Length: 403
Image (cartoon, rainbow, N blue to C red):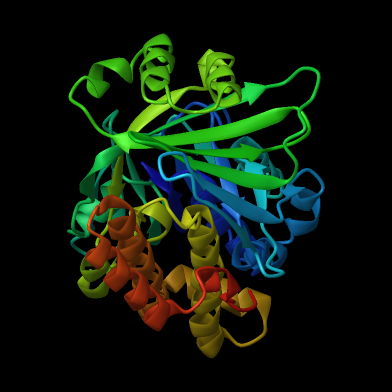
């Protein structure tokens, strides 16, 4: 048995950010990660708008990450079947794309030594019948007895399942993503290019002067379950869906790094599930994708997890401070006794719920807009989005506040 205070399940971006936010406020935590090392490999980038950079600045890592994050000035949309073009300015919002590995390494390097423990696979949560403290059951039969548990364990969250949160819904679409390296450099500028074809939509994002990230979305087929296990099949099947795309795009897919290719069916939490979900039981709560999986159209998934970490650590400290006062020793003593932790989590959930409801609704309506073929329905959805959210980039203006 391992006895610990605050245990964070999951060593992804949200889990590490939560640990760092708590560390900045003076609280120790233990991050338990199922993998044997930091999850820094694979083809994945993180879109970070102004709201996400505000959170990274509060964590104290924004300056370092900006040094390698390309500033993007806009989005160019081209419809290949209709021949229409549209350029969208970001209206002064800060928008950069980060390699997922860079942000994970940066967050981890700013944590105290021995904060992260690898190779720990959590399979269930129980409450101690005497103390009501959460007890984490490990696959190897051992347990971790904690004072507080924060589930940041992603889409298939064990903690969320224990809280009886609604499972994510499956979309009839999948995402194929990868990296393409241009050894002699590329001249793609600093904008995102989105191409809409008959069968698929492709987004191309430059990471630096040689590396490009791309994401193709299309309808899911039963054969994708088999293809997703073989990167060559992923590449070959992707090429079949972009026959009407420009030659330079076909060449980009052909030259992509095989080891970077992934194919996943898309999932999401509905707005109404986020409205009524019970995100706290006792001294256990969730954050990041364990709490909210969005349709990946607004580029806010990682930034929402960063916001969660700031709000959670702030709410916890505010409730503890009420009892402990400014003296650090008293604060730590009260934390060990877990007084007011439930009130802190309730405050956190209340603050996050409306933010999540609003952005998930915008994402959901945007998804319906892309999926429908009815002109009347498109007009109705466009009007509804305009009335509810104004400019499409409004979600980036949110400020989660100071840590």
